[in-house]
Image (tube, rainbow, N blue to C red):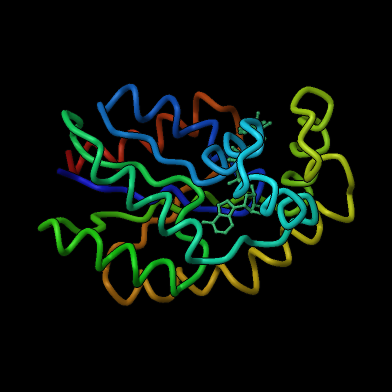
Length: 191
Ligand code: B4P
């Protein structure tokens, strides 16, 4: 199994690229954002609790996403590996993910980091707000908060992964097809 993190600030294209990459390389795509939105849509107790945190652009508690991911890791069979999208988002989540994978004789093989200018991030999210109906895309202040939260709580994972030799920056500017080709090239080297 080969396991990838797809990483980057909100609006960098993680979700967009993950769907295509998972199909191309037969990877199991695990998006904690999608899992949390599914809980909200289903009206579960967890969804109700998490919805106000997410609509403010804050991170939900580490233990919540760790549990969601742990369940999926154990129930997945037949794929060439995992593509983690939007997880981990804190160093604590990264440490837990490593533990979960190590226990199952796996590791994080590569962290692909999409690099996108700030103005382009905001532009993409504002544009998406019209179609997605996501409360965290609708308010420009929430978008800015998500980017701030990323810098403060999520970006430190880059240093952590760089020290482990798995950090791979990728230019996330340009067309969706061009970025897909760049990401595919890096993934092919490992699969
Ligand atoms: P996510 O669902 O991960 O939301 P996101 O960061 O906005 O990324 P997303 O994948 O949706 O957007 P993308 O970059 O693909 O998280 C939502 C919330 O859930 C978080 O704020 C947090 O509250 C919570 N959460 C999730 N995981 C968590 C965790 N592990 N711990 C704690 N809390 C967690 O793309 C955005 C837009 O750009 C799209 O509309 C797309 O069409 C467009 N786009 C992409 N590439 C483009 C390109 N090249 N050109 C033009 N447009 C492009």
